[in-house]
Length: 314
Ligand code: GZL
Image (cartoon, rainbow, N blue to C red; front, top):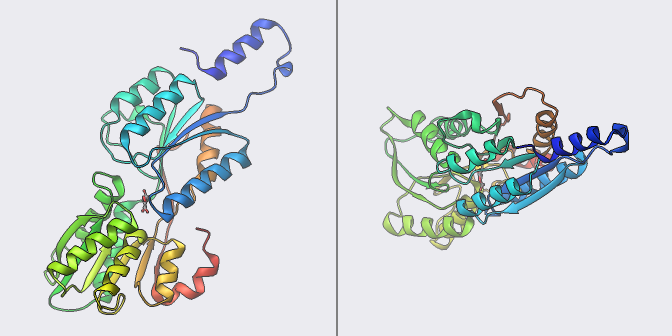
């Protein structure tokens, strides 16, 4: 099946008119975004929309409200519209084979951004650009073992969205580091779905069950910020009575660190827009693109927050 771009080229050639008389059609990118669950996601959406404008790419954008069925519907709609490229950030890793096969049958290349999919046939997607979540979990674990000492360190963990790449790998990377160090124990672990509200609610339950918690490891800053409210409402001092380790590096995390309420955040950049648009253009031009594009990131402890804050772009 010919896609939109090839069809218009064939029409131009068949018409016998000089190609220049057919203005190069704008590239059309269909993008399915997970939702607006966190500061990170909002910054990611802004980066994608601005970069599409700057690149002269016609962006068809859909917000799935964190529901996989909405992302599948959006991808099917992009196929029906015969877009040139489909991009999406898969809310969870599983359940994508069927719709990705439909995109492949329609000869529409698919780019994964931010999170990946778990499919047997990796020809169903062209490239995955985003962070190394396993390394982010390791960085959080290394900071813990280097900065929090004791013979019985009780850790509670606020996991991200169940089944999502970041939740799976941030947990795995963290546990890899504390494995074989029995003084560090994860005593409770539950999903806060990457949101402030759920992070607060679950932290309240953790504190009710066991107020003697030493460390909170949150898979993103929004859940950590929600948990900080719960810790304060329980009469405890976040960042002091409970050491808080988080991931993303959003502005809210830097503000919490400057207030002494968060101890460290592992950077996870949402600013994928420019890289996505450059890759879309390469794919349309038939240029080879790497199967995996990893974003480079750092780690920001509390004592670096004030100096780094003015440089933050998200
Ligand atoms: C990570 C991204 C995660 C962020 C959360 O790349 O998928 O989703 O860490 C966001 O803040 O909700």
